[in-house]
Length: 340
Image 1 (cartoon, rainbow, N blue to C red):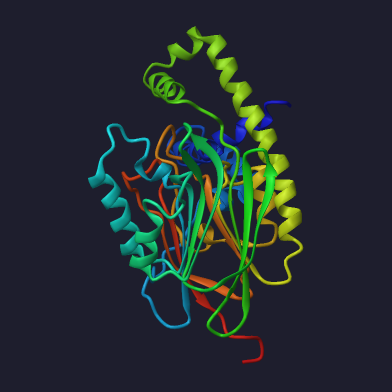
Image 2 (cartoon, rainbow, N blue to C red):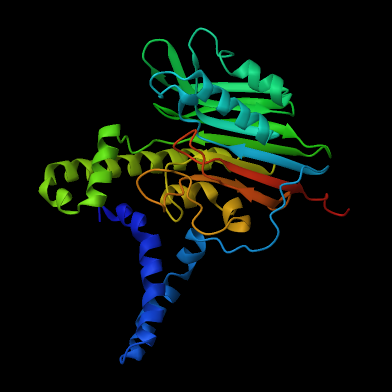
């Protein structure tokens, strides 16, 4: 049972395999066997609609009155890991953020010098997007001169800002936003504990994908992976419990977004989501991959919202080479007040 959380990584593949066999058995002499796969799908139908999104209506990203555009993107250090440093790459990131022009933007794994968090990017982002408020909470360091953490840019005044410590290296950021109609919306931003995979670990996984025998040959390394995964699952479970307790105390409708480092149907996902809606499931399509490495099934960035005040009319999660994560960009319609 101690490794049961690892099975969450296989859920999309198991679902797709059963869909395949439902069709496959119908073209064999043992057609009745299709019922086995059909029953398996029926047994996990809730998982099916947590992992896959089936939305084929209009995807409306138009900026209109009565709408709010929210973006969450793990910026992977804003290019700081790119060696040698490339100013042209920095400019591409800044141009991308200016082009998206989100009303509320969260950037986990944002980087800035310890001596001045406004440099080298914040001033440019604020000016380009006409942002009224900027907040930053570091959760890690790079060497002795660089902070890494979550940055929040907001075109509305950001009130009651609090950075709750979830663990030694993770925070839950909170801020209240007054919408154009006067109602308050409480925003929560987070970046939970990762699996702690090094570049060498990721390269090894890519090699295993090409040659499965490598995994069998290096059992010690495989055990190390399992330990890292189990440790990270336990860390995130504790962080999720603490975050959910804080979120539950909100007097206002909430939006929660960030890099959860965990999959749909995981304990972390279900605990923090609670009764909120998942913007991807309501307006996205397919698997919604947000992490560009290792596996096409890794949707580990999420945005949850209160359907009593917001309705997603547009959703984007397009690939970008500017980070190892794809951005979540949701265009919400602000619903009328009750009784209007």
